[in-house]
Image: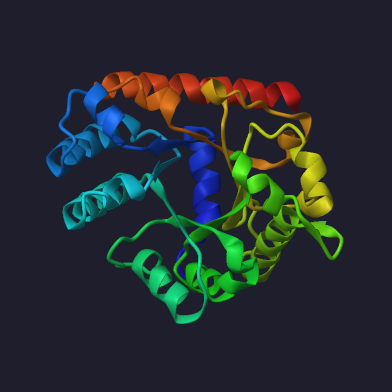
Length: 280
């Protein structure tokens, strides 16, 4: 059996810090880096980004910004993921897939098995169909030492009504966290950090109240966007969780020089470590 994603993530956080660096090559950023909004510009962006972010615990490419260039963009994404793998950098591919049956199986086959066409160490999933729809995907991920991050409590206002809805005495977001916890107990019970995590926005001040007891004893990683420029903050309740801070804008704006990206990554890691230590 391959080493579990959670075990590899635990080691990466200890060695490299708790920051997952986003790779979001939208048109404005390519222009800011002096690059054309083309597949060729995308390829140059990805090359520089990987060079500058190679010291991160993980990188999180946003698939949409590669897909918009069609097959040429997907080819660049494949090269980025393969390059990160060669450098020992974990990859969380932000694809937010969410479906049932054979359709979800097709998505899973594209990203999770070793040697898959667009192989990543973990992917994001959107559990609108119900988190149990990902049971088979979680089993496939565990088989190949990969992970999942299910959207639970996101910072966009449009998601609040659904995610905070209560059914059977628990919020929808809480049920997603509970499902991830079940998968960790089923597939990686011995790991300090599980392979199945959730996405929770740092900009949500009442997140611990909304999620309630679902986070008690939760071993999965929490992919938490929204620190820094977006106004997110660390809470005392975060100190006992496995926080993996997602930071894109604050780091990428330091480009295009890879050395400046490295410096921005180090500064972000230092800030997050200091902040987490203060609430511990």
